Length: 174
Image (cartoon, rainbow, N blue to C red):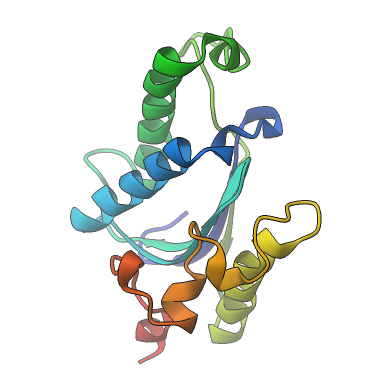
């Protein structure tokens, strides 16, 4: 990913384990995004947190020290997941054990997928996709996309202030 480019980004939990099913882990994701926003490292235009993956529409604005913001996000959330699992669930933590030289645990699959947003039409298609994701039959997380808390849908559809840290995508095209 390049700085100052807007991307549709998908990151998946290792082996599709539904780690993000509980609110505790979803809040770790949100807190990390908010931290990077407040530091001026990223802008987030849309998001959804699913049980085993996330979709973001975001822009990396500047490096976080020597790291790209998306790398900082993945590393920080991984550390927070580790701490939470050490407190709550040794059994689940064992599923993330790895024999990589650089770490003992891995939470995110290495093949995160950034797709550069080419234009407003593409951004709106991706935004619709991520907002409708919780309604898919195999997830069945909500009956209305505005009712799924861990999504930016109500920010756009109802001017919901709970995610006032988001940046409206139309600011890109002004």
